[in-house]
Length: 117
Image (cartoon, rainbow, N blue to C red; front, side, top):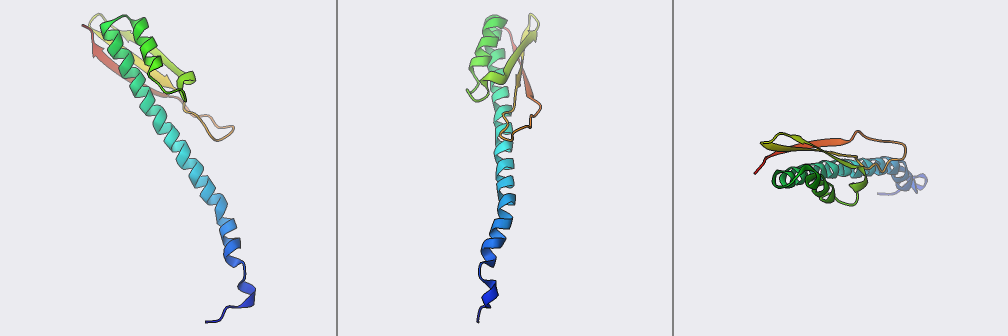
């Protein structure tokens, strides 16, 4: 099989044309991973805050929930305590970090309830 002379470099040009699509897919995958990580951290913060608050007061639970999250999302974490004399409820709100400049995403919320001792 013989190659035509004018086909030289065609593969490189096709690759360069497809490269922006590959980069976009990679950025979307990383952003999706950050969103999943923020959801997991919100669940961890809510469970920790509710568990500590069920044994202690709501202030200690809130502090424990905020301390339970990673440094990546710590600045955008807010814990709201509620409940009754029988149970402690914590709602953790965590901002999703964005790697895409100019885009912001809605924060994720997770709630956990534990019975008080």
